[in-house]
Length: 114
Image (cartoon, rainbow, N blue to C red; front, side, top):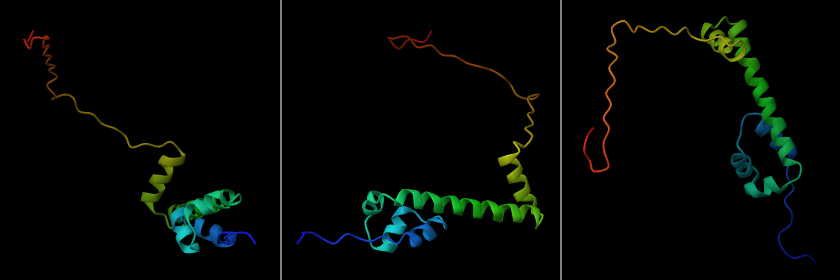
């Protein structure tokens, strides 16, 4: 009879479902009642976790797009334009009243100022 605790069986559907709502590995481990190391040592965990995170990202992207396009949310339209279309806020500089003076002080090794 082998010694030690029995091997934990991980529920991959729960892992995928939790990852698809951006749960961290620590949160998933807590919910499953295992250590994070147990998750990370499992040969299938990494792939399932990454797949769940990608599902979460695409769901979030879909919701943002819907808010921008279907609901006409200007803030979301601007944000998506910056992220995907390279759009930027215009930068305006007024240097007409700036006094551009540079002062330099050189200090010698003995502490004297040159």
